[in-house]
Amino acid sequence: MKINELIDSHSELTDTAASKSAVVLMTRIRLARNLAKHPFPGWAKDAQKKEIRDQCMQAVASLPQMKRGLAIPVESLDELQKQILVERHLISRELCHSKSGSGIVISKDQSCVVMVNEEDHLRIQVLRAGFQFKKVWASINALDTDLEEHIDYAFSPKLGYLSACPTNLGTGIRASAMMHLPALVISSQMEKVVRAVNQLGMAVRGLFGEGSDASGSIFQISNQTTLGESEEEIIKHLHGVLTTIVDQELNAREKLLETDPKKLFDKIGRAFGILQNGYLLNSGEAMNLLSLIRLGIDLGVYADTERGVVDRLFIECQPGHVQHAAKGAFDPAQRDVLRAERLRAEFAKMPAPDFTNTSR
Amino acid sequence: MANSLKCDLCSKPATVHLTQIVNNKIHKVDLCEACAQAKGVTDPSGFSLADLLLKASLNPEPAGDVRCESCGFTQQDFKKSGRFGCPSCYDHFGSLLEPMLDTMHKGISHTGKIPKRALERKSIYEKLTQLETDLDQAIKAERYEDAARFRDEINQVRQAAGPKQNA
Image (cartoon, rainbow over all chains, first blue to last red; front, side):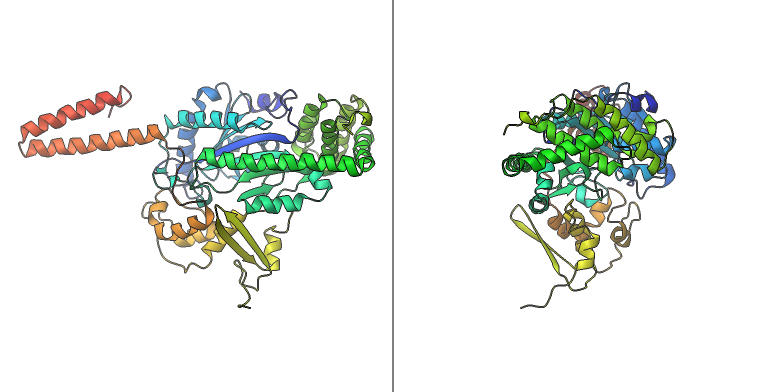
């Protein structure tokens, strides 16, 4: 598979059929793994890094899960292609900035990705649309076990899988869910939630990870500690916390409908108006408007089938995707025009909101 | 009241105090206003306390001159990057490690997945190496009965390991 084929084919997250979940957009687990007796990528010489990459990429690409997927060195991708992969949550920004000796292997359906020579030799990742920790853990666990047939992992019976950064030591697992929490944001409860989640030893980040903002009311919540508990326990704890947050979000929605439904309907209706008629939209504004439409879908204002469309647009209104669709490089002002054009076209097809359908 | 607390990152007076409870263990971080802002503690979209704890636990350490024998990585390098140089660093920086892991994680021992195949390969390899040394020594010492026993054991281990193990 070539990179352009991959970009143009449906992915787990841009596939309209996949998203049926109201609050949890996506479940993701990654494992940090390293080769025994080799320096970590940050300390390895260029020649060592290349050698490590060749060995890892060959082993990963030979796995049945990666059949007919894409295996490519990072340096042979252009900036736009890298940006698109970041926007699809397939690779990290850190990997994009790596000078040389890094690589990517992506499965055909874009649900499994292995980054080679990012912070660790191997960052294995599986992602799925919706709230699916059991499934995602089962598939990444199998992938990891299969890979172990070919690679001697750096492992210590006492400390577990050895990682470049001690914050990933032990299981090397980071399990995360991408959550859409508009009602908690609208009712100014998000700060409280973030604090509580932090106190429970979990991290909250924006849509694109560390340092990114929370436009579109989308948050990533993940475990922070990796040593001293098994993978199943870590996932179970996170799952429990996430379930509570889902309940909180649903309660906040009920409350908004109870106390001031007109204010909420006004926001949703205006979002629809701007998306149908706007001529300049930056990605932050587009995300926030789409977020309101998605909330409207969850409340029954729009048909359920539109949720997949909105989830796809969340990704396709990002700068890289906008430029790819318009086949060129465009500056931010030009992108705002293109983005609005695209959204106008999508929302012209969508039936007008029907507020009589909400539960209250 | 006791002395006012100092910022864990820059030692200015601390005004922001964070507490995180993990498995009934309390972790505290004290920060001055500027560092709290810079680290995004006041940012509702979140911050990583683990990263803060990592940096904070590195700061009070006196600069030692421990060096990893396998890859040449020094304690200074670790302080700069917060990353290690190679898997063996975990053996060489053991003393530095334990208090840090204790604040960073729920425990200091791994209880999760074990790479069974890789460990099997390793133990078979080690067993064979040991038996081959034993065999050599037995032959040199003309203990032929022992040598025959070691040879049989080597064959057994190789057979049990299956066709993949051609060591």
